[in-house]
Amino acid sequence: MTEKQKIKELYDLLPKLNCGFCGFGNCGQFARAVAEGRASPFGCRQNPRVGYRISEIIGVEVPAFGYGFYQSTKAPVSQTVLKEEVKGLSQKIDDVLARIEKLRKR
Image (cartoon, rainbow, N blue to C red; front, side, top):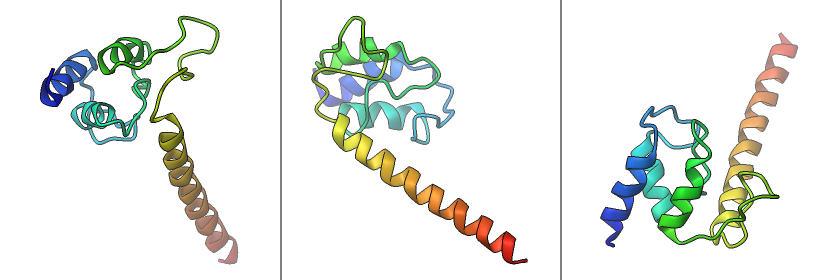
């Protein structure tokens, strides 16, 4: 299966709401990121269970039970994805705290 076919198959599984809760602008961008190993297969917040089917397509094994949706046993992208998410969240927290501090000074 070519990468383009894989992205289309992943996209077809997604709800196509383009909500952005996964951290990407739309479902197509999320599908591409998963196919390229830049996002977790369980990133869709509208339907996290679709992550199991996505994992099958990209060849990532996940436990059937015991760890919840977001834990996988062989997800090669998980550490990288988590580090990027934490980095992004830390920056957002710093921005919010800076705005709060500005409001306090008024």
